[in-house]
Length: 81
Image (cartoon, rainbow, N blue to C red; front, side, top):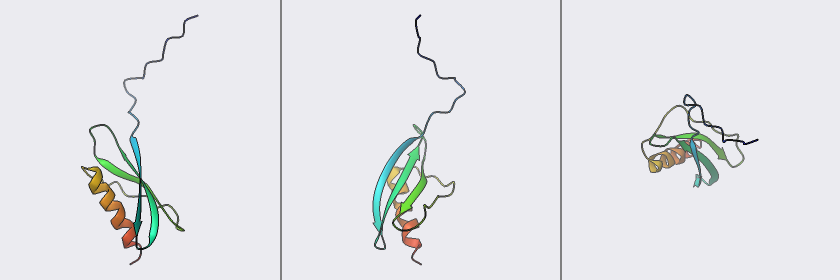
């Protein structure tokens, strides 16, 4: 009995590419999970901040990884204000 690999259904969306980026803002360490689809914009999925509950970002997107990292840093820094 031959087992052929299952082909992905054409209507299924591809999985986003995830990247974890550490950082420090206002003396708090955090880890951001950035995501993007191939050839798509970057978005912040969640930010895990030291001694705080996870912060989920809105539906904003950024064209580059660097812009998304900078936005995550600003979100964490703004928590102190």
